[in-house]
Amino acid sequence: TKTVVRKGAIDKNRAGRDKNDESYAHLEREGKFRKTKLGKEVQHKHLNTELQKMEDQLKRYTFVDPLVKQQQVEAFELKKKERLFGAPRPWDSRMPSKHGCTWDVYECMDRCGDWENAPKEENLFESAAGKFWDLPETRAFCQTLNDLGQAQLKDSDMEEAVETFKRLLSLDEPDHACGRHGLLFCYMDLGELGHARALLDSPVFKGDTSALAAYSRALIEYIAWALLEEEDASEESACAARDAAVELNPYAGAMLAASGSFMRAIDPDEVPPAQETEGMVYRVEEAMCFAVQNVSLWNDADGAPEWLEDALDDTVLVEPLINPHPSTGLAMYKAVLEDLEEQNGGGDQMSEEDDEEPPGLVNPEMYTKTVLSEGNGILPKEGQAVKCKYKGFLDSGKEFDSSFNKTRKKHVPLTFRVR
Image 1 (cartoon, rainbow, N blue to C red):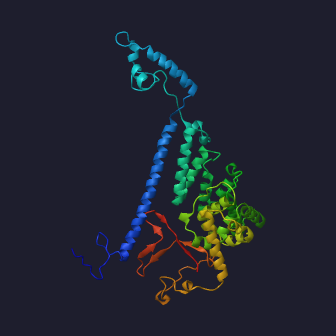
Image 2 (cartoon, rainbow, N blue to C red):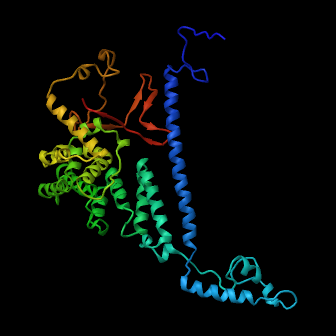
Image 3 (cartoon, helix red, strand yellow):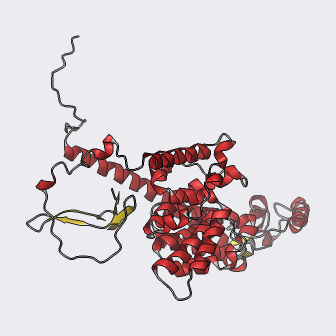
């Protein structure tokens, strides 16, 4: 058998579509998006189904005292031996049992074991509200509810995540599942700083030593003082909150201040969760996890990274590199510092890559610029990340592109860095 290969043959998929065609690439991207969206919907549906099943059981839960159960078993075994069959069998043994099943007394004794007592049901959402974690029967519900909130947070469904975490805190007031962290991030991401501050001042955050709590308070105080210029805010209180956060975990501050190097050197999907509970390695790994979610919030606050950088001590930041332990988080932290040192060492020298024309702007004369309305907002500085909603129109007035995603029915802002 001879195989003939044609020169210049076009690489096609099974449907015969040219893989190099732009429309095929667009369809492939849409297919991946739909696949990812479907996976998220399946995960949410699975978690909601599990929660509904557990909720139905906990609303009609039956507690059994082990001592009483043992006494009932002994009495039951004695009465079971004394049963009479045939003609001597009592007529009331053929009546439905009080247990609530559909069997008669003898059948219930063989199948259920308790033919005299109807099950006493209890609604744990009423009797155990606020202490769900203390009961082994309800702890799984708290864990699943927290998993649902984290999934909604990851998918940017912030309003739904807020309601999920608020329900978790109402059921488990001491918050053993740490739902307060997810709720705090949702408030910060939605810009509801008043709710975030009230949550930080609530008893649930008393004694919380996480980087999220400390740096969120510092960011709130900075925005209130420097950007909103609130009357009850001051530079002293903002700097005090910042210094307390840096003292607690200086490595998180380094990640936020060096956001450019962090975004270049780190793949957010590869950042591992913190494995230990204390020590330098734990604080570095906690800083990496914290920065993945919060670096955009600090970049959105004008001047916040620079204000935070003023409180950092370079000698403290390099301590993890002097006596490193084998850790993925430490390796990523080292990569960020190396990138930062390279950027600082380069000064104003531009690399060949930076000297090239940006993609899509090979000939600027081919484009025209018309300002319809001059804005008066804060201008982004070089190196800062910018999120914007947009719409693109042809000269005919027909819309050809937009940041509004029709499938998700929400805006997906375009994110880019000012060069």
